[in-house]
Image: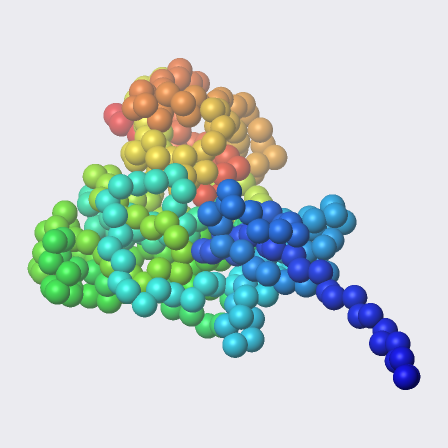
Length: 321
């Protein structure tokens, strides 16, 4: 009898990668199924999973995406944002605000501005750290929002289509919807969409929205207080006193104008920024709760320049006789 020896082949180990089904973010990696985890998992023999499990690689540098034939695969993060396939069913944006939002729509009733926001903090977690300056999409995509009458989804008023890559990189998009008042009251509107992200909401804000000047967004030089309409903060001089007050809500000062610090410093200069004459700081925390700031000054607001360093913030000035 002839005995033939067959080399034993070692089977590849399987790893279980648990991840967020909406974002692809990795929750945990192990060698066995977890009965205590409700998260979706990917079963794979990918060496990346082994490296993550052994601490040789960070799960924050990888993500689970749709690969060939819509099969899930584990890849490294890059400058490309891999969007989840959109839902088949239309989703009604809730009127309940949440801090965990991915996409939100805000309607500012005082100037009929519709603001569509993409949460930069959440999106930045889905791409590599060195790609924060410009995020690309792996396919050209449009986010479509269906504007309807509240409680009447069959009454379609308008379809708003937004280039996804532009929205994600610009943080927000501003639209004037004054023309829609002929079809419905601004407080009688609702939105539906097919979701790419998990958390959306729609909010009606009784406030004036101030657009950020795009030409100032990337500015590294000083911004000058000017006598212009549509600003976040106004400085008004009457005699020897300047009164500082906010023209917008506290949320807009914080989120849109980027006033996270408690103090904002203004520098008083002459014909050029080099002609320094003095400075004063305003208490942002007081402005956020609607309190006025008042300062005694020894200059004419029309004869000097006031400069500051926040490119998102619009500050105006005027003088009362």
